[in-house]
Image (cartoon, rainbow, N blue to C red; front, side, top):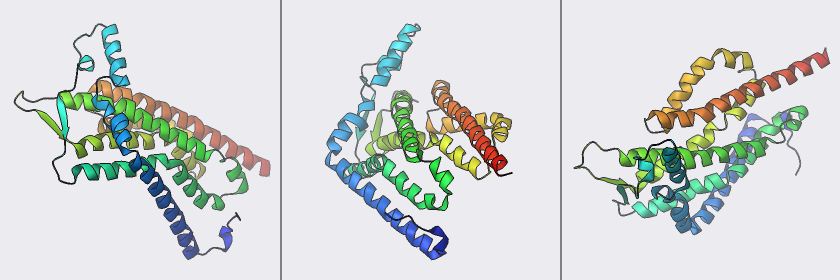
Length: 275
């Protein structure tokens, strides 16, 4: 495939190129969503509904950890959750099936989505920049999938356990709608997936001069506050869950500072070589 010469492309040519990349992204997600829809029964059984069962790996681990530190009366060791999932609309289950397949298709097709994004912006980069960014698609995809797994195995179980056992009165029973239940899993997994892209975002912001390692160190205290707020948004309002989620985000922030240092160092080295 011939490389695009961006110098000879007008603004409308760039828009047309972007349109075709977006079309390819939609087609890729659609194909993946179709495959996910075919296997939707298994997705619901082994993925969507799995965190509702007390034999979910996270609950087993937290139950053992609680017993190890001497806490025996914990909801992580219960026989079952005190709630049921219901569908209160005629098209509730069908809509849940369709939208779950679409979101699953996006997750599956994420490397292809990033490939199309990279194919659009890479022709505008210098050859040296393209050379040093060859692992962009792989690294971005790995970080996203790690984040999705973190959201699914950590954030989701903590949220379900807290919200399912929260009660203002014994007179009120928890009967969650299927759309609300799936939305919790979806938001936890996708939000974590995008949060784990922080090192990639910092890399590009440093490349264009909007972020420096000195600035990131200087505003680390403010970043800590933002991280805690972000943790509070994507987790239930209990301190333990927020700390569990905040730790990897803070680690990613420190990694991002190191990445920013490396980018600045390479830029300075390149500038000195031309002097």
